[in-house]
Amino acid sequence: MSAGRWLGCGLICLLTAWVAWPGFSGTAAPGFVPPSVHAGAEAEPYLRSALVNAATPPRVHAASIAALPDGRLFSVWFGGEREGSTDVKIFAAYRETGALAWGEQHAIASPEQTTADTGMLVRKMGNPVAFVTPRGELWVIYVSVTMGGWATSHINLMRSPDLGRSWLPATRLVTSPFINLSTLVKGGPVFFDNGEIGVPVYHELAGKFAELLVLSDTGEMQRKIRMDHGHRTLQPVVLVEDAQRAIALMRDGAEHPPRAWRSETTDGGRSWSAPQLTDLPNPNSALAALRLDDGRLIAVANDTEDERLRLSLLVSEDRGAHWRAIHRFEDRQDFLGQDLALDQFRPLLAGDLAALGPGPTPAEVEANAEQALCRHGDTCNWQYDYPYLIRTDAGEFHLVYTWNRSFVRHLSFNRAWLESKL
Image (tube, one colour):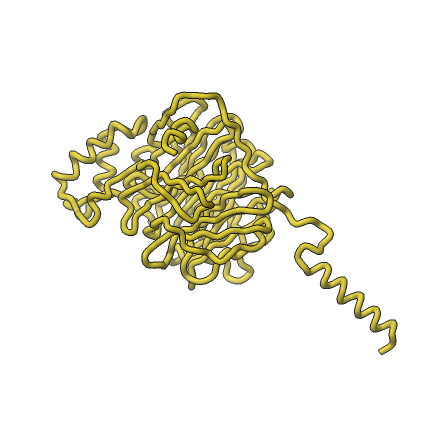
């Protein structure tokens, strides 16, 4: 081969390596956009409660919440006769600025409508996550199933350019070029400085592992990043520290004793460290978390090794490795391993109702909770789970979670209340 041909081949190889090698392309890799938070005016500490959903349908789960630019709150959840039934729909409601009670709920997605929008059969609906994009659109990403269980799920995207007054047709997100199965969503998004949107997701078919989907600002799939391998991590929550660093906390899917997992990135989410166990007990249940301005992390979780009888607020001062509880939002841990007879259960349940705040009538709450919690109508126990936590630009915290399988409870608190616990 002539010297000219050798030179040409060498230049082609160098060019190929320059294009393919991370960090050597002409376009800088995107970095995270850290959340911006305003402290807000000084105020007396408060913790306020309300129920978000109506009494019908009787079973609800997996709520999320978003703060809208106009000051309102928007919450979504799925509801039906039971989890996984074909009558389940995605419901939504607004809370007006300054109000405590939530407005009327309405269905925004159903199996029938999703089938019509995507052209693909949908039989069941699951977890929805709502958020406002940097462009000001309201998005809802939600799980659907054509056949089988949650391990054969897909995810779909609904976009609203007018904060929910109208919705564009749902689209199916293609997260795999093969059978496009087993992608589920639970955690809130992260944003990149080039306009892309990172959506924490997880996989359950022939493995359990966390991933990060990266979408364009109009919802097109850009890339998918593995955060773990194997059979152990679910439902990641990503906490951005700066443009390059973030921490991910993940639900435990396999370990004994059960503990939440922790991973981190130092390159804007392009790669993640091998997950390590934290000291936070996790009975294979979802958790929620936020990073405070001073670097401490707070989480809301079932900090037990079994069952979901307790929901706690916790703090970490070492980037998520170790945790301590600072408040119990719900606590029936004394009844672990016990099934109460109806005559024991009803007085205890009645005592909880006054603290729930505005929402359906006490009789409706009691009836739904009893139906959801009492097996065969004679033995009962509690369940509090699937927290989702946000902080508004004004510094207010909003938590939603499933209360006794039958209602979405919303708790709001300010930084003064949080500081009183820290």
